[in-house]
Image (cartoon, rainbow, N blue to C red; front, top):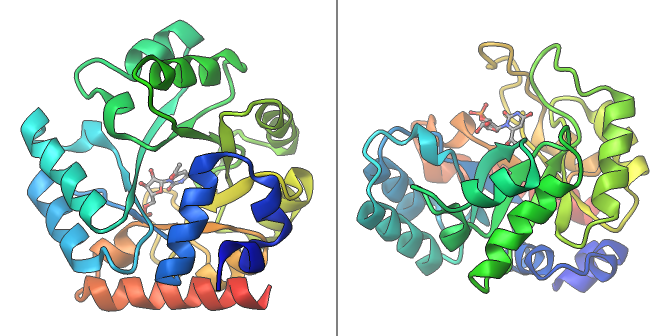
Length: 264
Ligand code: 6AU
């Protein structure tokens, strides 16, 4: 089954090539899983890609969390992801003025050169997205931005009004492929879906089949509930990389998310 049948209007209305690329990979792998690879070394991330690559569509990184970063080591990681047909997503959560965001896409980690997708806050206004896009354009690459419209952490400040204004900002930008929504709350997700309409995607962190497992204010919801409420991608970290058998866990999240999408 192709993305046109599965996503229907959302496929047709999401004009961005990265949104289409994601949906095509999801259909091929029958999975909406984005792996949050919050691991301390490049070797551990490469190992988890080799284990679960066939069941995940996207690898989400926090490059500044990696203890043994080197340009060569990272290019091995990028090659491993490409071999498995996995998109690369740096969860940088940009939040500065446009010029600084553009510069931060380069620098030591050179995010623009390898990331297909990045996250950004909307708090500083629309120029942050233009700065990110200018960095990709400068090296003739195309990438997509996900704006944080909601968060999964307890007592965060992203209220309904903030989400609404974020969506106003995102819908005016060709570089924004969608929004981060709160996977731990199906009700908030459903209202976000209503605000967003069909033109952009919603990707959801705060996902764990064991909803009681959150630490340090993290809150979790079940992948089935998130997809039913309108999520297009489930971002799963410890639920997969912390599992005894990461491939079995990735398969469980892939199947739960995919079946829920087909039933929606
Ligand atoms: O599944 P976990 O709790 O092990 O990991 C959750 C991952 C982390 C967070 O940085 C990220 O999801 N995250 C995000 C984003 C943008 O992905 C936003 C948010 O509100 N909450 C959240 O946990 O890598």
